[in-house]
Image 1 (spheres, rainbow, N blue to C red):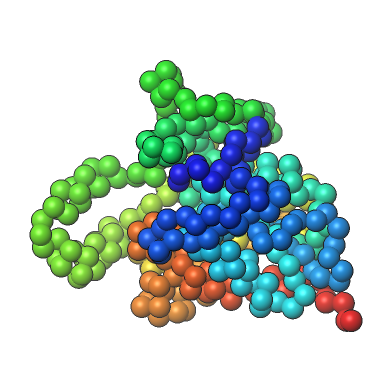
Image 2: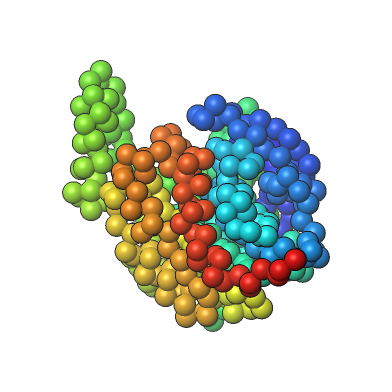
Length: 344
């Protein structure tokens, strides 16, 4: 993620530059980002008071919710508004963030906003972000630089916030202790396998042999490839903090809360099992008194040829079709949690 359309924030770490309108390069051909005065992607302002009789949803998440790869109006929050009568969605999504930063966004910007439902959209990789304290970004020269982030840790069973304010300038990775280096966020789970695949990619027939035949997907499925193992460890540090965050957020919130996991493309394509994250996130949500909705079963009912249009081939974010499918899947559950519309 390049930081040009973002600015420093003393609590969250960063946010979108307020009131910008910019076209962002992407494999989709580029997409339009427009932000409001608060510094979130929206074509309208976020007002504390209710907008007449309209029912209101507050939505929190990362780049899948913010809509990386698609323009304003083509995100699942916007499709949801069009599918549900008299409903407006305040989308507080922010790319490259985890549940810890989403909770801080809620505390900083949304606690005093009138609403009927709060939705926490957890991209399932978020557990790894909650367990991190540093993350790389690209600077204006395209160089990979390291920044600190706010994070929570458990102290006698209670979550305690650390790293606020986060450093405004990049961090010299060579000056970090060996322990701190273990808290740098990384997506790479199988470095040896990745190196081998990169070697094979140099072969002129690689695309026909592997990609064209679907051999890579088949091999991962047969090997039981699990991209995120943190949900397999109920006593793991990252998961324990994430479970505590879910519990505190839901228990302290006065309105209904819906937690919705957003699956990786590997789950939507049937390559990797979703059982572990479904069980852990579902149990944590229900124990805290929240509502849990998993959109994956609805997405899996769609033929695989169509499902593969839901994610971009390169960065695997949701396409416009993917956002629309997600909105269709979640609309009945969201509607059931909202109050009955006021007749005009």
